[in-house]
Length: 286
Image (cartoon, rainbow, N blue to C red; front, side):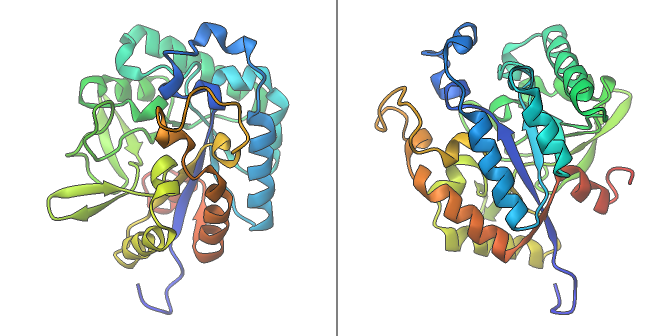
């Protein structure tokens, strides 16, 4: 990218989950017990809203339906601030553990609630734990059939519980039955034959900031957009402990760094909502 060119607008997203709703704790805190926990996502999400306001930055908030029902005023507050509201499903269940009919019911229920709260169409979806994998690609057809214009659930890496290593690494259109849907994959850097993840969740917290910045710059210099994603609980080092750091290091390590990492990235790069970035690329109508 030449020095006279406009800076690339990268995508910024928030998965609106609470600390007790993450997949790592599902064996200890099943969905049926969520109501017995005091929520913290509202306070932590509002801290993100203030951070984004100070940096004049808009983002996409992928909201769990259960959380939207619990705190609809928060969803309205996010929308009034000019951010995009998108779906994170209802109960944070992994897509490949659901049948197509169960998944359809889950996403339709969430989409209707979010649209009722905000009064605007919901275009985007992100699966719990990036669980659109090779064995659940049928989910993209369900999403397209239920009126979702884009998905951001695929990680182009190979992990035990998620990822499609062969997935295209840049945002693109893909066939979903008789329709098309835009896919915004999570960011990876290519090293030799491997895709290395960066910019989201534990990867954002644990990888040195200078490396993350270098990888975003590398993307942008090649006309690629990066996506940065965070959870509200990652700004909350004082959250109640479900287990030890040794048992679940990816959840607890470096929580105290999240805010400063985001501050630095927001000061260095231009960001916008996922839908807007896809529109800028011509992958969604304006």
